[in-house]
Image (cartoon, rainbow, N blue to C red; front, top):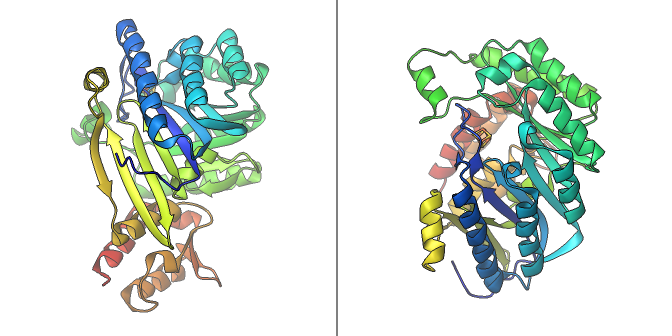
Length: 397
Ligand code: SF4
C-alpha cells in the first residue's frame, strides 16, 4: 500500500464478514461456515486492520459510507457488529449523514439485535430475500423461507430502519415471470425503498455451475432472460422505483451511496478477507487509480495480521487505457450513462460507427451532449456490448 499522504477527501469503507450458515449453491462470494473460535479471532484482526489503515489514511478524509457485507454480517452477534462499527468511528472521521449499511439474511434478523444496531448508528439495511416464493428459495438452497423474509422486513421497519433494501433474483429455473413480478409487488407493498435485482447466473466453480455444465440444470435462455428483465423494469417503474443502475432500483433519494461511490470512481477501503480497496486521486486533471485486494482466505488473513505481514494479495496501478475500460464497465451500467469523451480518444472511426449501430437498433441512446445511455433492451445484453466496446478501446491508439 502506498504510505505517502493522499489527497482524496472522502472515502467509503467496506467490511467483509466472511461467515455463512451454509453455502447457497450459486454463490461465489468468499465465505466459510460459521465457527465461534474463528469469529473471535476474525473480530480481533479486523480491529487491527482498521486501526492500521487509519494511521495511513484516516485523518485527511471523511468516510461517507460504511458497508458491512459478506458472507452474512447478521450472523455475528449485534454486539460484535457494534464493536467493529465503533472501531471505524473511533479511527476514521464519520458524520451524522454517513450511510451505514448492514447486509442481513432473513433467518438471522431479530428485533433485539436490530434495535441495538439501529441505536449504534446503522441506518440502512439490505436484506437477502431473493424471492418470496418457497419453491425459488428451495432451488437456491437458501436457509430461510418466505415467511421469514416477510418478517425480516417488518422487524427492520419496526426497529426504526427507514432505509430498507432487498435483494431479489429472477430467471430462476421454473420461476414464472408472474412470480418475479409478484415478488416486486410484495416488496412495494412492504414499502421497501430500494430493490437490487439479479438474474441467476451460473458461476464457474460453484455447485450450480457444475450442475449446469453437467446438463442437470438448465437456466433460462437469452430471450427468456430478456422477457424477465423487460417486464421487471416496466413493473418497477410503474411502482415508482427508478432504475439508477442495471440491477438497482430505488425510490427517489434512496439510491445506495456506497455503490454509487464505487461506480463513480470514489476512494474506498475494503477490510477483511477478500476486501477490495481503491485509492483514486486526481492531480492536475490526471487520475491516479491504485487498486489492491486482500487474500481470499480467512486463516491466512488471520495469520498475516497476527504476524504483522501485509494482507494484500495483489496491487495494481491502472494506466490510462485501463482507466477508460474500467469507467466504461462501471459507468455505462448506470442510468446516467457515460460521456463519450471519457472513453473515446477520437470522435470518428470504428468506435463511433459501432455506437451508431447500437443507437440504430435501440440498445443505446446518444444524448445531444454526447453521453451514451443504455436502454432496457441494451441492458439485457450489456456484457456483450461492453465487451465489444472494450475491444474497440483496446485497439484505439
Ligand atoms: S448467504 Fe449470501 S454470501 Fe452466504 S452463501 Fe448465500 S449468497 Fe453467498
